[in-house]
Every structure is written in structure tokens, then in C-alpha cells.
Image 1 (tube, rainbow, N blue to C red):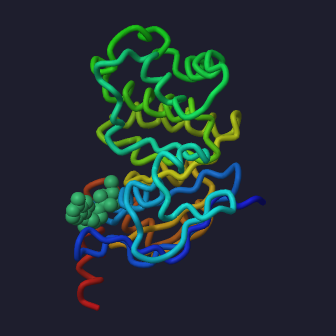
Image 2 (cartoon, rainbow, N blue to C red; image 1 turned 180 degrees about the vertical axis):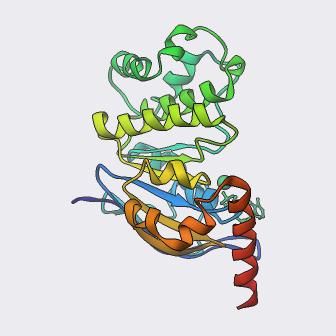
Length: 254
Ligand SMILES: Nc1ncnc2c1ncn2[C@@H]1O[C@H](COP(=O)(O)OP(=O)(O)O)[C@@H](O)[C@H]1O
Ligand SMILES: [Mg+2]
């Protein structure tokens, strides 16, 4: 299998606060790799470090065999990395179709076919294509953010918590499309999620991030069976949150 991304020992800081404490992971071509972690674990920091929005203090990031740590975000985008950020960040005053065109700014060639492909996966965006993106619901904005990422024809797509703020039903719908995009369009994805249940049923491989460290890794099938994952991440929502607090306390005792 071809390695699309390899991250070795990455450390990232906010001033004196160490948010990533030596993170290493790999993404192979064609895979969906998920990173699970509670609120504040460092997931978004990792996404920003990969896409060049934050510089790591230590460690290396290779994308298609080339070092990208230290490069500017626009250079990394041009190399084929699309970042679908936490909170979608669509351009509210642009129409849906204009938002999609913005996603292709870094590449040349005919983009009509790509817009049509996005509309095939997200028919609601086609219906509303001339409306301002600010009027879309949260779920539709998430669809637009993913569509905009696809417009770059990325070799790797980073998805930061696509389920954030969405109902369980909408979450299921969006993840079904993420799965189809991976299977049918061969989009390789690195998917960050707090919702372990849906992530472990979507991705192939998973890592668990706890307070800036990878504490567990494996195939999603293995992770689903793990007692720790069952107890701390796959319980009922309120039990899981209690479990995560317990886990944090347990860590501070050590
Ligand atoms: N702008 C910031 N300044 C200082 N600390 C931050 C900032 N953003 C995030 N952090 C801290 O870094 C840690 C990781 O945050 P983040 O990557 O956003 O976590 P996650 O995405 O997993 O919820 C948290 O402890 C958070 O408080
Ligand atoms: Mg986050």
C-alpha cells in the first residue's frame, strides 16, 4: 500500500502549552483513518499542524514522500491536501456555487464536471446553488464544506468533526456520503471525531488521542472490540462523558 502521509513525533505548542506531545501516525492511499478523542485532546491542533496553519516545534510530516512541516498552507493545498475545518467556515455571503468554485482556486482545468460531481453526492446543494451559503442549515453547510474540499481533487482530505452540532440522523446521512466518496471516488481521508461510534463504523484504521498523545491504535474492528474503547468511548453519551472524566482523573493520578 502506498503511504500518503506519515507523521513522526510531532510536538505543537500554544505559547508554553504543549498541545501535541509526540504524535506519530500513518495514512495509506484509499483509506479512511480516524482520530478519536474527547474535547480538548488536540485533534484540531493536529489538523492545523498538518495543513500548515500551525508550525510544529518538533517532528516531521511527510505528504506523498515530501516533507511539508514548515511549508505555507497554500503550498500544502497545492500539493493536494484539502482541509475541511471544524465549524465548516463556508463563505456566508457567497452563493453555494461560488463557494464550490473557491475550492478549486488552487488548480487549473475545467471545474464544471467537478461541480456536477459534488451535486450528484449532495443534491440539496444543486437545488440551492444560487442562494447565499449563510442561509444553509448546519448540516447543509457541512455538505458544502466537504464539497468545497472535493473541488481541489485532493490526494488527502482532512475532516475535522463533521458531526459537530448535527442531529444523529444528519450525522448518519453525512457519514454515509463520506463512506461512498471514499469507496466510489477513492478519496483518502483523515477524519477527526468525538463521535466514536459513527467514526469506528466509517473508517478502516483508528487512533485514540488523549491529552496530546496517541494512546491506542489499530483497525477499527479491533478498536470497536477493545474494553477501554467500549467503556470510555462507546457507552451511552452521558456514561461516555462520565467515563472520559474518570479516565482523565485516572491519568492525573499517575
Ligand atoms: N488558541 C489557543 N490558545 C491556547 N490553547 C489552546 C488554543 N486552542 C486550543 N488550545 C488548547 O490545546 C488543547 C487542544 O485543543 P484542540 O486541538 O482544539 O482540541 P480538540 O480539537 O481535540 O477539541 C486544549 O487543551 C486547548 O485548551
Ligand atoms: Mg477540535
